Length: 338
Image (cartoon, rainbow, N blue to C red):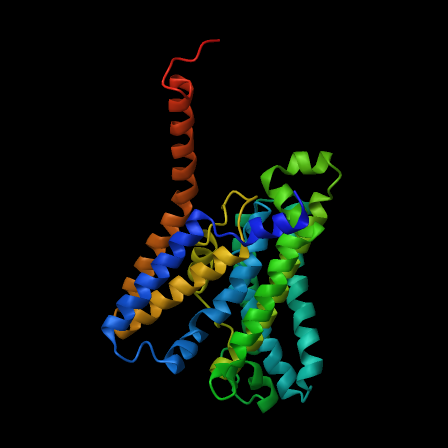
């Protein structure tokens, strides 16, 4: 296959991605029915703020899940990032100096997860469940329970400013990160190795791929993206506390799984995750317009997460039944002779 044909294949929407597009349109129509102001361009652009922060976490989680692992500590890493920004702002450190420090620290926390999972062979769910609590405690130790709101205006710029008075700066940052992640995952050797490790880590190791390095790197990237999400957080909300983003992991995992990323690893696309984020953001916006309570929204997102997990199972069962039927019929309506 030529490079041009390969790229055309990559850009072609899968059946599930087409389904997500239809669901987004239906959700938008429902939201527009609830409020005549929904289709306003200002309102639509402003509503994107609802999924940008969990979206950045979802892009990081995606690359971890592709390698057949999981990381539920990303929201806690975000909290560590926000209180670190608070400390640096209070110390008078300019934003260009604070950003690399926080990214480096959060990347280290992500890489530590990867080390425990890949190098020590510990189960990723148990490891990240433990570090989720440990990192959350670390955030409270660094930032205390009082929170911090005295940020320098430059710290608030990425998450609060609107370009041309209408487009959130945070949306531009998200689009740039999404394009970069799409290139990394789908167009580079590292991305192909991530998929290979997720499909069969033993076969990948035999093929000469450093499985441990790939997994640690994927966790480190997820931690770095959590730092960027922390920067958007403080700009959007103007505060930093140890409990920032507490409870956000349900939305993040739902976006990844509903976007078509196989929870068992080896399959998925950035486009699918973005479409799932748009769907979830549209549903959250619509439910907000309909005054649907938070507990009901949690039930809806939980149901969508279950649907996302069951989707590949149902797909494999359907393929098995079709192949079995074809085998019995011989593909031509006659019994297959051996």
